[in-house]
Length: 170
Image (cartoon, one colour):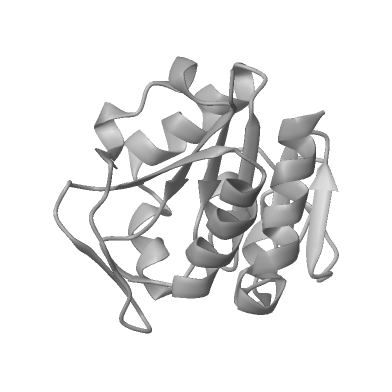
């Protein structure tokens, strides 16, 4: 039975390569990838990638996936204090699933209380929020602490995908 990951992206202004590179890594490893946003309407990346989401966020069932990954880009701020998204992140963690976030999206995990006493990284603009919410911020390209994977930004997208795949294959 193949593993399944759901990537959560902003409806507008998600960071294209932070979705596309990890997705490519996972698909090559025979891991099924679904993409979700607020609605099932087309989503558009900062660099122009258009995607038709497989799911709207409220349709995500934790039991159907082995991991959730939050994609960065300016649009991700829409999720920083979104109750549905924060609860989804908590539910994945409580179910013992893998939770990932890249660029500014680790602030979603921090705001959900998932980074307390965890080694984490993010885009530099989020360093203070992660520290304020109890994370041990490193500024490294990628950090893995248990089943939580965080990454700094587009330049770490490939490594982010590799780490997610590695955890899923364990």
